[in-house]
Length: 638
Image (cartoon, rainbow, N blue to C red):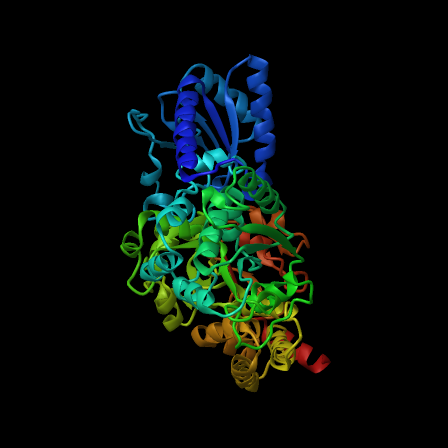
């Protein structure tokens, strides 16, 4: 139990010394054990490492760490010998482990053909011919603040967090800052809420502190439900104590004694590590009564959500914590005035709380040197879709979309052409190639026609139908509507019906006007952001890819070859070498032809699965409008 700030400092120094002694005494094997790593086979890799080390009678620490962001390279295994760089091996399979331990751990030879990069530390000489992490294109333009400890420490060991200055910001606040000073530091930093709305964090804290009513509450919104988004989950899995510390600082600033972390039950690993971190924080006296000998007391609880997307909206989240149906309510009053159990409540995102300790510890002026004047700091994105380097990235605000997609993401996979990038998740908007030089910050993305959102970023290529892409997000958002207000409940369904008609080849030109009309009404009249932003992806797609919508309506043609019945695959006789690859993969025997002679697709047999299109590396198979006679016959039949 830490009774004073001096006790915390003494523990930090002792822990650092012990860890340095351990690193000097025996090797360490670190394995990425976030959800992405485990899904890729990290548990089996860890088991293989334990068995091999035990079999050889070796002394080595085997430690599970969080996600370092390079999800495409999972499972990741690092071997760290005393006095040597930490070497990362990528895409490790259990059968590779004995070789890595034999060569690297036993013989001290880095297996460079399997190594990804090296991590250097003071006084350590680098391995020749192996890049450092800052030299990798994926990390070169990143700056890790919210994710600073992910992949670097054991998330289930509070001492690992304390050793890297964990809870020092809380000690600084309790030991030498008044609550108003903490709030002023947060206001000066310019931190804007990382949950998507971008409201100034310090200002929200100030409103809550000044609000009348007791008790006050601090709430962490970890109900991350966007398709393709996993930023909050990875931080909770890889560095849960940073969020707990940030919440404790916020509670001290606004005068709260209780807090809640609302995390969806679909995140079992994050919940497991949060529970353990909260227990450890109590055990060490960093939660509970009279923290670090001060007059400040703070209790923290974990609430599991059932997975309703609408509970990402703060008033619906609050209703769920109270045990009621997760539905939003009209605002004002805002939660800072009347929130949980009608008491003043401060709601922030995981990343906002995760950034807080660094701002207090290093100062607001330091934070403002990063990013842009109106959007200081960094942004965390889940970079997914048709891109080479999928994963989790943290970049300074103001970096362009082009830099993220091509410099960090490595460009489009399979040498395809870039088509669009969806930012802001299912309630955001897609931007075309002409917008790639847009700076990534709250205001610039909004002006461009998209949103920052909580951090999802999905890249699509030439083979994506933007009409069907918009339909996908609309289907999700409509299904997640709580149904409380008519504009969202009915408007979403009418939009869905209209867009479905277009995708199925039954659309009319007036449908485009209907989409715009319904969208406007939903944006103006819906109760919460879910209904107001549901039309976002459709409107953005219609704005930037209207010709594709019109082609679906006027010509009954899907140029991307996605909407069934609105296109056909054809083989170009000049380009086809007769290799036979398309013939082999066709499941319906719709392709015929002799070897080394152009093949033919028989349209009456083709089921439009796209297997031939995907396997042809020479571009001999292309997408074209369906034969006029076939379309006419179907029209007569209808």
